[in-house]
Amino acid sequence: MLSAKRLAAGAFVATAAAATVLAGGGMAQADVPVWEARCHVYNIFNTGGMANCELGTWHQVKLTCVAWPVPFTYWKYGPVQYGQNQSWASCDSLNALVHVEVIQA
Image: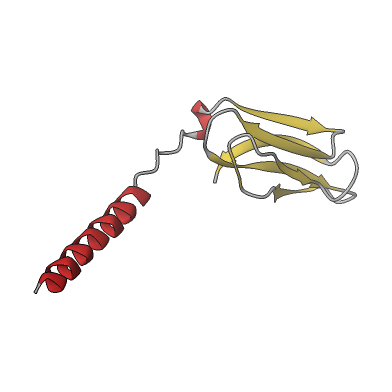
């Protein structure tokens, strides 16, 4: 009888510990919107660009590029990054960068 009580108590403690871990896992702080995260964008030799943010937010760099000789506009996106990690991208040819910005991912 004593071992059954210990077994039940052990099962209760294990279940409570697992519930605490699962409940705590979903309590991450919300990301800051990209326009409030003090993000910085950089033009790299008028061909590529990069972005990073000072505060914790998911972001990526978005480039507006132009193709020649028939001018048409297209967009290139860098990899999604978090916070101070850098998101890089480049246009397909030299001097093709028209605009660089950081967007919420």
